[in-house]
Amino acid sequence: MARDRDTPASRRLGVGAIVVLVLVGFAVTVGIGIVRGAGGGGAAIVTPSATASSDGVVAGAAYVHVAGAVASPGLYRLTSGARVVDAVAAAGGFAADADASAVNLARTVDDGEQIVVPVVGAAPPAAPAPGGAGAPGAAGGVIDLNAADVAALDTLPRIGPALAERIVAWRTDNGRFTSVDDLLSVPGIGEKIVDGLRELVRV
Image (tube, rainbow, N blue to C red; front, side):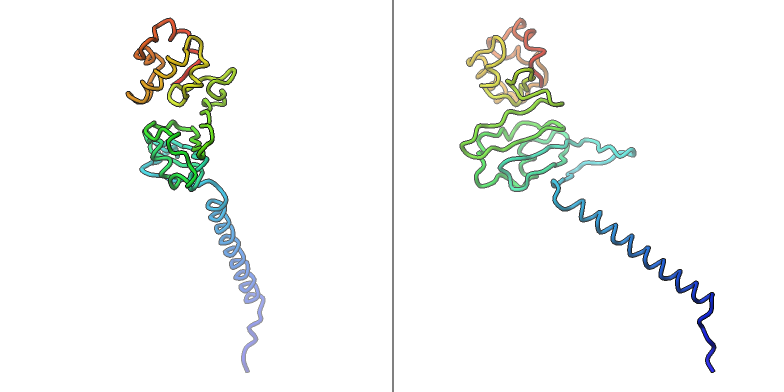
């Protein structure tokens, strides 16, 4: 006759095994939820050539929000010194209705900036200053010398349409402004004009 195996010890082992299986199943479910939450419905993030330091801070990285007429709008992490062409490429390239001529692809990007690609026929969006200082040309705003167009620059004191066009031309020929003093290299702009613009522009 077979011995009865339904003892208190065997019952405890059975309950323990069930508890372990439930905990493992819960851990797997949570892990799947985390992976799905990270990959679904949010902005895509690409990480070319960026490395993290021991404290978790990514060295040599610039976070850029690419929006508007691109294939995959979202938040992208680029290497420091990347240009707008890299940001657009990371977002999958221009959409079919994008006005590519309205975007300066050669400009280097700044950490935390938003790049908006307009559709054909739409006015190019004004680039906001960091920290919500306002759009270029807006009341109380600070104009970015590396992003503002002629119309925005024309709103500055003592800068008319002619000087605004020279500023844009200088930027096209020489690359981005690295300091406000670079305005002294623009024909027709002297120290008095630059001194009056220091609190109104940034680079």
